[in-house]
Length: 265
Image (cartoon, rainbow, N blue to C red; front, top):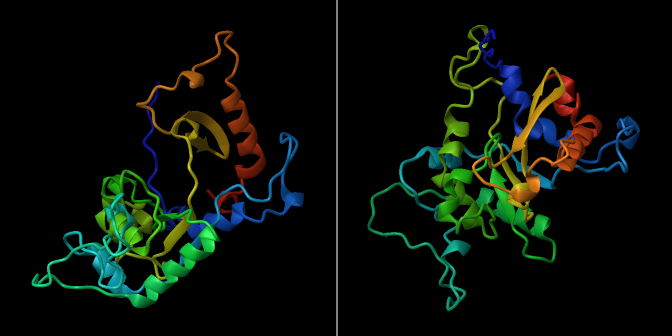
């Protein structure tokens, strides 16, 4: 078989894949524009409620790029330090006051994050999942009891500061562009870093899937966690298509095909 080398992305491709570029396409959907020929019931929203905070203060971006893991002075409480015998003041991240490391504080951003948490939680302490333009700090969950769930502002900062995925978003997102679309200076003029807070939902890992799309067609589906075995995901013994594959294909055709980035990607 003849092998082809994938083309490198353009600026427009990278920008189209950032969260704020596609989120509104899947919230408050105009049902009249949905191809519901394959859907039993059309939905108005097919992604989790989220709040985007941008632009972000320069000091916060410098904080993310700085060495070490240290919480800003404006948010030192983290839920991951709580234990059964903790008092309300025991969940504070301890820092060495004699340390000459640069301290950071961005109270305005901290207030925005707290407001977003309150809005997403309502009357319940549900928490949120943080991410930047493209990536979540899933490589840093070991800092937060093995979870992306954040219930305090300090949790958000701790995960973001500990993540190499987030650092890549902040520093190198536009590396390796197509040669005729390379950028001098790091970022396009129209670009702005963003912090996204998504309403927390307990998803079962076996029900997460990765879909591969080419030319607006769904060409493959795999488990999101391919190293795990889930008995209920094994192919039917009669050789028929798995019900999950049929549901995902129907969902893609109804809600996703040519809707992502207005069909440009």
